[in-house]
Image 1 (cartoon, rainbow, N blue to C red):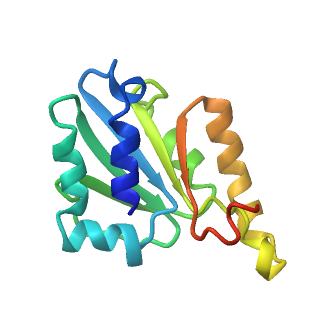
Image 2 (cartoon, helix red, strand yellow):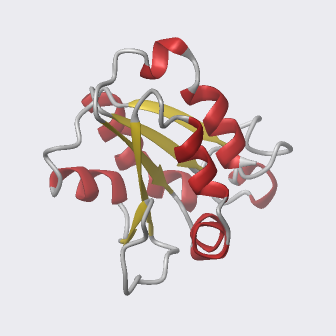
Length: 153
């Protein structure tokens, strides 16, 4: 459902109406078991790119610590395995990605994971990235891992 929700957001006039050329979508917190697998085994993410091709050229960047190192670059997206703080490391190495041409989709940003487990390590591991993104003024879209805890956190 992430690509479908992201498609709805990207279709809003205020999000990509002024974009010319490439629009980078950085998928922070992506995993090999979910988002990257969908990229490699289906055309689901390509459908998002095709949906917006008349408005802009979407370039996907899958970033996270739970991604197996990729041997090749996919047609629609690049795969980047890195340890936290992922966002800061990723953007510091890519000065061409700016708040003007980049949208961040944050998957399970650590919100609420401590509600049932009473452990807050995941939340604190995300904190440097969340502060970096806020200070850098990147547009961020947040997706939760589950509705019973993330929305409470």
